[in-house]
Image 1 (cartoon, rainbow, N blue to C red):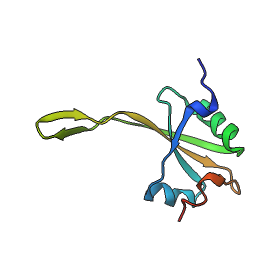
Image 2 (tube, rainbow, N blue to C red):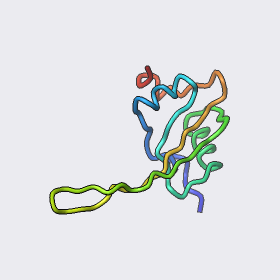
Image 3 (cartoon, rainbow, N blue to C red):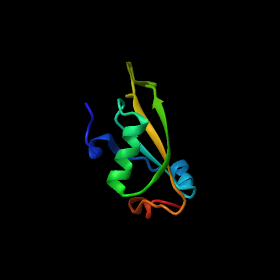
Image 4 (tube, one colour):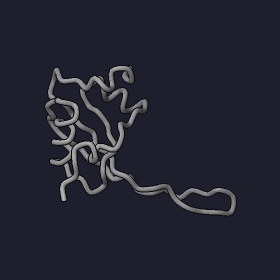
Length: 98
């Protein structure tokens, strides 16, 4: 089942590294773990009205964490780095960049 565009993109990732990537027209998002690159491309183009050149995805595995004597782990999630065509920008990120 294909999800809606707004359901595929969960949230933008704004870190120092992603801010540096924005100067190279690359934007980082947390996406649905089951979404593939084609669905991510279509979702970004549909939501932000831009043209996407490429999509790179990374699965972030859970890391062990402890809180006193209780142990657990962080959740796993999927990150997508989206490269836009030259000249394209996502206005949502304008205040977050360097």
